[in-house]
Length: 382
Length: 145
Image (cartoon, rainbow over all chains, first blue to last red; front, side, top):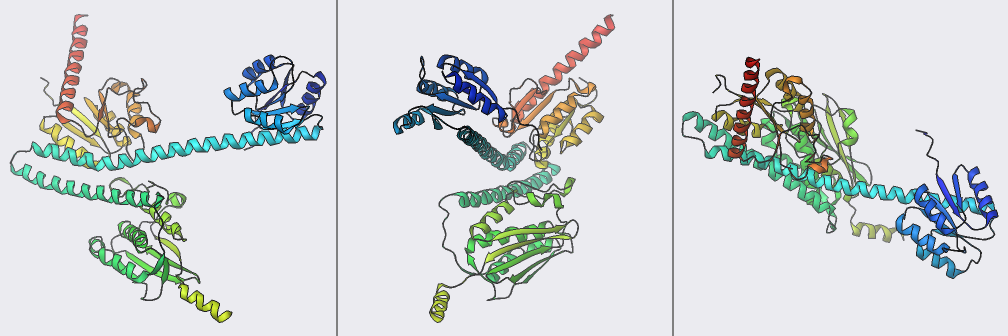
């Protein structure tokens, strides 16, 4: 978008008429709105009214001194860039002005080019610092929202459990009440499972974020990790009428990583592949040696993910909305955890998916190379 | 006493919560209508004209409830139906950009989750009595003229 930017205002405060005139001429030509004042008092008033982006202040003026003007403006509006004009450019005056909040100084006499250069540099500095402040505020807000969302996620199952227990307390002993009691207790148990899953995810996320996260990467055989996970979910897969297959042979794919982290990653991907599959569907885990890297693909033949969601998939709390009753329980944290863990280990994760055909999540990890091997190589080549 | 049982509409995306709350209200002889998102809630409200609506604020990770309440109020027949909104984030709704004490919010009560059931029941009963009184005076006034 090329909307015309709002005209920026520059204020010149100088008791020298010729100086005000030439500054006005040069800066107006650059497209700025320029207002000039002949002493500190009027200058301060003008700044309050005009809210300029930049102020040029002569240090040596009758009445309120330039240094005083700089100090006062900086106190009230630190986002205004202050440039000091001085006829006696000594280190002391420069340092003094900077201490009071000036951004830069311009020694007299100066050429139009010097003025343009310093004004442009000052305004660029202002843009950058305003931008930085904005993104800092955004980050703080995001963090607050994140915490709010997490507490809502934790509270939702707790509320349901609480409400069930509260009603259960008042149930009588009729036959229909007994049936309900049994059903509700089952639901309560399910919701505690959900709560545990959220806490587990949340903890692993916090652990990745925490500074204490420093691990020694070791040699891990992926075959064992994936076989263990598939065994854990055999029953779940059978319930969903989904078949599981691993095409990862033993002693083939060794990566540099952490066993727990890798388990969390493939656990998440395999559970998703089962959950978002169709009855009669398949989950296939396969590997590929990319030379220096290993790619592991977890492919399903499930519902797939519309392409518009692909860029958001690995974001925290992002969930592809199911239709009506098709909602699948989940925390919305799983894939963001995967991405973080994989990138901690120096790898990457990507997705390929087509609606109603299936999704393939591909994890690229660094191949493990033993220190001894490296030594050997060095030895043989040297 | 009215001949027909009073209808309460519950709108909440947590099916377990709806199940527990509705069985409590049904035990107290209310007819309960259930919806699990804002759109369905709005549809049922227009169709069934409930005597009271209980609405969750955060549904599907958005503050869907607030906007549904606004939509409900746009329907002439539903301008005065008592609406109770619920949230487990009672004190944190400002994080969603909504001040909890805003006068533009068109609900009647704001209750924290989990709901204190006897308290909720009392509030519902009070609202229902008020509604009857208002209706009776309206009818009385009509008869007098």
